[in-house]
Image (cartoon, each protein chain N blue to C red):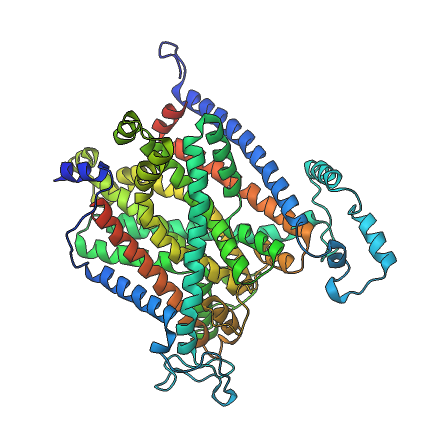
Length: 327
Length: 287
């Protein structure tokens, strides 16, 4: 807490507190990532099957004993587990995620090639979801039972739609039936539309449910009445005054939503044969490509932790009261 | 009126004896869930067609009077497969939710009752588990233990556990300091009894709703894994697996994927509606 007698710029002080909080959260995030790395490393060492055989082409490879021995040494798999773990952490700190068994190139390069497409997809889906939420809730909240009921029915319905089914249905209708969008690929903007919608619609349903509830509570507040009595138009009241107060639950849900989006991205990338980290993870699991599985998991976890920190800071920024409570 | 409701919602567990017919949406939801349960127990009541019978002549038939929801690439009846798949899907959903809950309650109790240091540890563990998106956690699990129904249940259960654990922990912390716990302590009840008879039932009460909705969510997640080919093996009539198999034919035969998915959606909707109704009944709150 600041001393009320000192004269400092409140805006600057607020930024300072925000930065402090960001630093604390980042430190915690690093600890979490270390735990994720450790957990993933040991979990995947429990995996049945010899990783050497996976490197040398799976069960059909039928390599010679010499080749097996050479590969074991090449990937450092002959050393005891704790030594492997320490080596692994050491390389991790240097940003080296190892070699992918199945693609015979550094995991970081695979990630660099694929991450853009996934970021594009999840970002597009998040923006689209919020657009749908704003359209649906700000316009319909507190407009009587019928409209509210219909809108909340639409929200419940869309929240219940699983990504994979929605994706397949959209594919059948808009790609194969109407031929509006390409059924697969990740090169054009048109190919982004269907995957983004199949990720965004269920998410919008979830966020809209909580936003509607808080918006309806907000619209009953006295400051809304005072804004109306000053002669502001209904839409201005809703967008300029009520929205900021009603956004908080939805924003905090967005942190969770990023996890859901990443999970959904795996499915959508598989359905639409899109380039991306999700489909890569799926293939790596099937091919027992340990370094790639670990690498993708770590990057996904890092993205998720970072996104949650950002959401936390955004939360503070929207509602300064939160900051005073936690400082 | 609102004071009355508030008082009721904060009172310890008390049973309502008044029976009331639920509203239309909830009635439909409960009816659907009952039908699903019946299909899981006795699929023969709904269809006499063998879900595994291969009739190559009748492959890819559109929905008709003989095959209500059409047939798949091997001429198997889709309605029969969906009916027979109900058991598998419900089993996976319920078992996974129970597993999630068991982990969540253990962690939540540990965190809520174990003192500040343990609580911080549990909070940290949850944060670590939260850093894995649920499908990634489930994929990792399947990568380690292989695919199949058993791993599918455990993977889905593990994926959902952190979310529930956070809720249980919050509830335990909220309930721990209430008057009736203090009263029970003052009466000299042993801790185990207080935990089992007072703390747990009251902390779990809001979670009954989450649990109901959780079954629907678990079915969706398990279907997603099956859809990715990591769950039940193909000839088995499991909804996610059926969807996954039909994906190769969506350009020509939409019913292969549409109907199994529709049943997944209907199940989620029904559990959500039933959960909201339960919430309304238990908390005396309007949905």
